[in-house]
Structure formats: structure tokens, C-alpha cells
Amino acid sequence: MRYPRNIERSIKKPYLENIEVSADAEMDERILCDALAAMEESKKVSPALAGPNIRRTIMKSPIIKLAAAALIITAVLLGAKFVGGPDVANVAWGDVIRQTAQVDYVHCYYFKNRGNDFIKHFEAWYDQDKLVLRGVKASMTYDDGQTQQTFDEQGRRTVKKPSFFAGGLTFFEVFSGGLLSDKNEQLNQQTPTDVGNDFLIYQFDPSTDESDFIESIFITVGKNSLLPVQVKVYHKDGDYDLIIFDYEAPEKPPEFFEPPMAASANGQSEVVLDGEKVVIDIEGSPGLKQAIVRLHNKSYDSDDVPTFSLEVVFIVEEGFRSMVYPPNFIRVKLNEAMQCGVGPPTGDSFDDWPDGKYRNIRFSPLVKSTDREDTYIVEIRCWLRPKDD
Image 1: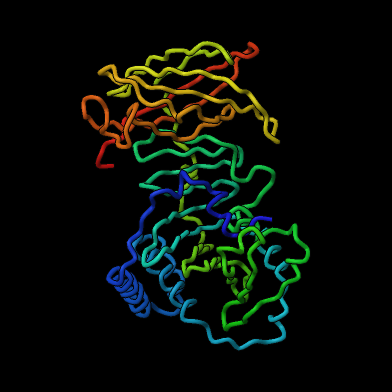
Image 2: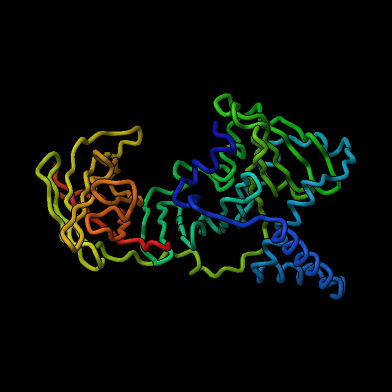
């Protein structure tokens, strides 16, 4: 069974790399002050309208969204006043899991605390079996239950893979690393560690292979709703990972969950497995002229989807060749794509090309089948990433 540390693994690096959120004292104070100001403002509203208005204020204001999240974090970190009680103290974890099965809409934040900073962050929306995840530098991931696709800030598709929910996984199973699953009967019998006025808190131990770096795992659920509001993973070095859930009525229109159309590849060609290298002309990607590819070493994983070794070398407009990516090959699955990068033929820096010009080549290869055995189409989407990016 996977545990919350695997949240990062199950969601994969494309959405978690290089996400930085400042968390210095000044920002903490500003966010908290904004949240408190919003609460004070809500007091001016008549009691009958206070709840809906607070909800609309939070949902429509990005800074108040983060402020509300900060308030939840602060409240939990400072500790609740535990009162206990036989009626809720014996609520089994399996009851929480059964409640999550009734949820159609979830909104969540992910924070990764390292030292004094929140170094990674994403926000996700799940509605009627569709997921949108906003991550690195405004990258967007769309998952329709069959396929997940990620687009960068320029609208370029960089990743195409099977759905997060392949094999019947639920949203909560994916985002809790497997804890919010009904597949472990022993786990399902666990009762709260603490009972507060509004929350039940469950504590879990890390799996054996993760106990070297994880101290403990806490999941907070609503006392009345029995729905998770927070997953927190404490590391032995004092760091932690945090996910916050809420269940406000969805305000996103249906089209929000529809991915954009993927642009045509910058180049493609038929390639024979274990055959000769093929030169692919690159169009629509300034600074890049050609890609030289070779496909070999076909194998199968447990899912029976063929995987290939793909060699790629780029030729820039000035005629210089890039390094082979990686030094030998890259492993790619049929009909799946991921973002890769390569630089000059030698050197450790992207400006170590023969003319000293900076070139950071990013690309997303895709291998598709044809009606001929051992003949495939290799598509290349590629671009030069600016130095200031």
C-alpha cells in the first residue's frame, strides 16, 4: 500500500518541479492579516447571509483563498481543544472512506515545506470524474479519467499519459497516496487519535520502506461530515508535506475541465525499430533545424504497453549538434509523452555551445504505431527555453 509520501510520486515530477512559494515571516503576516480582515468584513453581514457570502469571498479572491488555507494551517498547528467523547471517539477510519465515496466535487491545495519555505505548491479541482491541476509556472494538467495531458505556460503539450485514476483509483486514493482506500481492513478499523470540537484526527505510521525519513502521518477530518480536510506528513528532519481539501459548490464552468487542442508536432517521421537513424526536419520552432532519432530495444512492462529506447540528437540553425539525450537513450512508452531537455554536445552549461550562445532545448517525443510491424511514427515537439525562464 502506498502512503502519503507517495503523493509526490503518484502526481509525478512534471507538476511538482520548481514550484516555489515564498513563506517568509512578512508574507505569513500579510496572508494572515488579509484572512482576518476578510473575517472582520464578514461580521458586518447579517447572520442569515454570512455563510454564503464568506464562501463567495473566499472562492473569488486568490489572496483570500491562500489566506483561508493559512488560517486552517495555523489553527491546526496551534492545536485544537480536545474534548473527547464516546460517540465520535470510536468512529472507524473505514467510515471516513465510505463518506469520501459520496463526494463528486473536491478542491485542494498542496504545499511542500522545506526549511523556512514552501518550495512546491499546486492547486487542483476535481468534478464529476474530471481533474484540473495547476502547477509549475502556470502549467495545467487535464485528466478526463482516461488520459492526462499537461500543457506549459505557452500552451505546449509536454506530457501525455494514462489517467491518474487508471485501474479504478479514486481522487482521494491518488491524493492521499493510498491511505484513503477501502482495501486495507486493518487500517479501516483505526479510530481517532484526538477528538476536537470540530475535527477528528487520525494518526498513521509510515510504511516500512519510508520509515527512515517519515516520522508520522496525520489526517484531519470534519467531525460532522467525516470528510478529510487535511493530510500532513511529518518528516524526521522537521519538514512536512501538506494537502488541504475543501468541498465548496463548484463555480468552474464545464469548459474549465476541457483541455486545449494539442498543437501539431514540430516534426515527425516513420522510424523502423532497430533500423537506421532518421532525420526529422523541424518546423515552427525558431532556432532548431532538425532532430536525428533512432528507435530500438522494444520491451514490455506489466501493463503490456511496449516501451522503446529512443535516441535523440538536435541540430540547431547554426549547424551545431546537441548532446545525445540522454547520453545513450530515453525510455518512452507507446502513445505516451514526457518533457525532456538537452544542451550542447559537451560542457555543463547551456551556453557551452561552440559559439557561446545559450541554448536550452526542451522536447516532448511521442511514439505511435502504424499498420506495419516494427514501423512506428516518432513525433517531436520541441522549443528553446529562454535563459531567464
